[in-house]
Length: 283
Length: 310
Image (cartoon, rainbow over all chains, first blue to last red):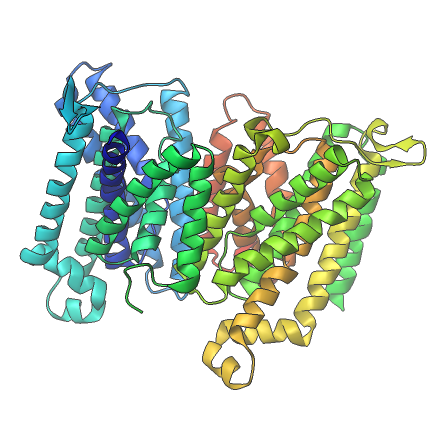
């Protein structure tokens, strides 16, 4: 039971992380390697605002999400936008976002140092779910994640702004002809994706220690999730996130901590051999 | 003709360096630069010539590092033999990773080769009784000829082994890119459909390009382990990855010589910065910013920048 619950907690975090990655990919065709670093910055800013500045956790949460979103927009403006239309844009943006990741990680190390920090939990205490005791913080993550993802889904399908994101993702020229401000939409997609990363960071900061390399492992997991699900569909991404989260929790139980990542990667490569567009992806 | 002459002059120049440079630290920087140059220029074969943007070559390098380390230390193989064995495992690793890569496109190639590097990293970390885990393997036997031990000559011998390796690898790369095989890689890169129509199997060329570009990084990895007498998992870190990749891009893709020059320049630049207090972390930021600027303002890289001005 504890395994199931921890799998769902992991799945929720992966879903938040991966949906931001997927949103940026579908709209801009950019794979954001800085996603994990943005998550880490969100956690550090939240910690700084709520602990040393003493403003409390909720302003910290807002500051964490806001700073990640702002940095995301800056990355889009400085490191992605100048390269639109280049024939090797994919290669260039992988490299520029990788560079952004290095810059953010090393800056964090210089600013905050390597000492471990931890955020207080959003809510204190434990709750008991079907006989398994989990912290209320983790329970809140499990409740919050589907709500946020639902809101994201509603935003991209029901609102005009959200639909313009998808329109730009499908055909930039046609979207521009319809009067959609394409550059603004790109910035919005990147900012929104980064905000999701920042939120994940703040939530994770209450479970794990915050270090400059905090984002590396979740980034890799989010990558596995989007590959498993097939880049480009929110539903597939969320589904894959929970499959991976549960698989990871069970593998840890059966095989132990060491072999689990290995099996996940192996599964990833096998999936890619047989279904190059992901488990739920269309050919 | 002129280029061949220039390259020969550069080789002669590099060959006399250790006669004038006697301190072991500067020689060590040259050796590091040569190893990086082998990785970057071979990476360029698959990335620049075959147009296959992949994250594989650090994995091939790491395969070489651990093969040589295990062979020489655990199984007592002569280090001279352990080094080329690194090339063999790297080829094997390239074959494994090319299975999915042969059929994939674009970002998926990046992701699967990246996933593969993480898989190897996890394997190294989890098998700590064999690989030493996060701490790595130490006290790997060094090179000897008869009674002559390379460790005692202020890196004089190692310098020439590294330079020889880089020379061999560069000759190999020039030969390969000039050959019909190299031309067919360009054909696949520039027009996949047309190349296919002319009877070139795209999947097979991709497998061959990855395998052909894995040999020397593997051997370089083997040399690296024997030279440093250490095999540590940080050869697979994001920092090393971005440094090696930035050499390919800053130097200029599909040029071979560009990544080699960039490797020499960047190794000395980053190591010099590491010597400045407070720059240990910041030097990676400098390299990252430099790479972005090159991509933005000189997309052809250094090699084409120099080529244009002469």
